[in-house]
Image 1 (cartoon, rainbow, N blue to C red):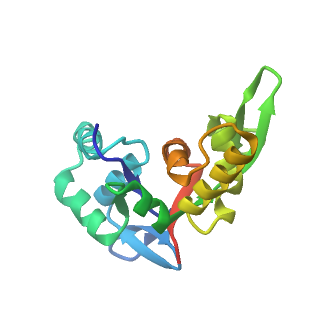
Image 2 (image 1 turned 30 degrees about the vertical axis):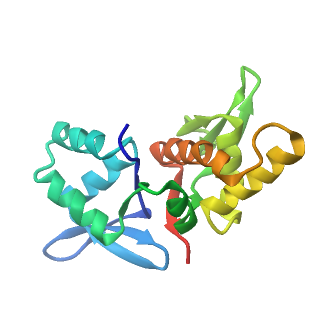
Length: 188
């Protein structure tokens, strides 16, 4: 299995000047500007499971020189790998986007996120919905794992260690990013 790769930041849309258009990504209290091909790599990273998967998606999307662009985005901090999952979780936090739409009687185990009156952008399980709803309160993803560990210990629903919660949290992060209903932000 390849190491997970995650996009960092929140897409803020295009910024046009007289001679070019760049795409703005907010990362923490700063912004980065991406070219069209760089934006393509960054967007595809939302649904990629790892670097090989992302490069395959870039090839299928006809993004030229995808490996060089991927490396540049990694060096700029707009993409990050989770080689050290605990270290990654200590360095990033989750920011929710859109509105919670709750669950429905026909699918009580799924919770929707999106815009009222439109089709949901994501429908996730209760644990991932809790991450989306409350994860931003924690100063980092690791701190959210610590909260889950405490709850698990008190309710005897699972192992009471943050490390035991990490795969669950990172899976939820992947699911939320894939639906574009959350963004990763560096811990400040």
